[in-house]
Every structure is written in structure tokens, then in C-alpha cells.
Image (cartoon, rainbow, N blue to C red; front, side, top):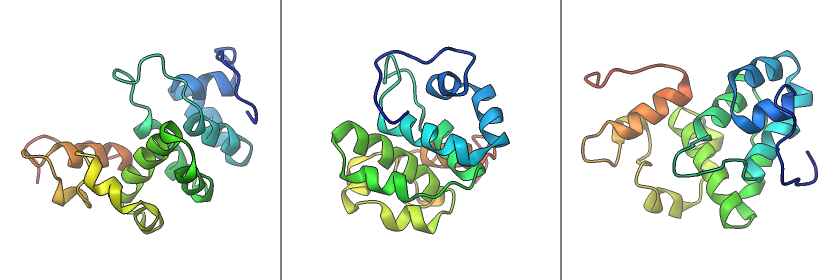
Length: 151
């Protein structure tokens, strides 16, 4: 996935499944994380969503990076990219930081904490008025479902 193509890869292939945010793609990537790494980073680098207001891939990609123990270096390098790339990389890093990654937290630009209303540092310090949205996003990235009433 070194070059950006403007159509999805075939749906049954690993690149196509990852581009679409499908669970089977995560399972296939787990079989050989080293060969899937560039595909996963490519899904952050290039926009594959049809509608970014309805489709949030940050949790999917953050979980892949965490579960496959992929290096964060390529994601951190994307912070120097154009606005879209930077936003996607920041979203993934925020979730990883909220799930406990010190490397992700240290890499986040200071303005990320000010601009993103879901970001509030660790989950227990959510910036939202109800104090739950940041917690729920972080719990999703950490793979732990959390009930609304839980602290």
C-alpha cells in the first residue's frame, strides 16, 4: 500500500478488509503482524472512509496497533503530514495514550489536548461535561467494555 489508489482493494483481501475496518482483517493481520504493519499504517495515512462523520476508524486502528504490538514510530511521523493525515494519526495516538501508552502520550502535540473535546488526558480526567465519553473511547481502545454508570 505504498502508493495511494483511489479505490478499495478487493473485499476478501487483507488490504480490502483493513480499508473497510472489518474484524476479519484484524484476525488475518494477527496471523502475520509484520507483513500487515504497512497496510495498517496506510489506513491511517490515507482516508478510506466514505463519510468521516459516520465512520470512526480510530478505535479499530488503535486496537490493531496495540494488539499486534506495532511500533508507534510510523504513526508519530504522520503528525508532520497534511491536516487529514495529522488528524487521523492524532486520533489513534490519543486513544493509545488514554489506554496507557506513555510513548503515544509523549508524542501527542500540545494542541491535541486543547482542540479535541474528547481528549482530556487519562480516561478518569475526561474533558466532557458528563465525564463519560473520553472514558468510553479509551475503554474501547483498551478492549474493555465499560458501563455508563461505572467510575
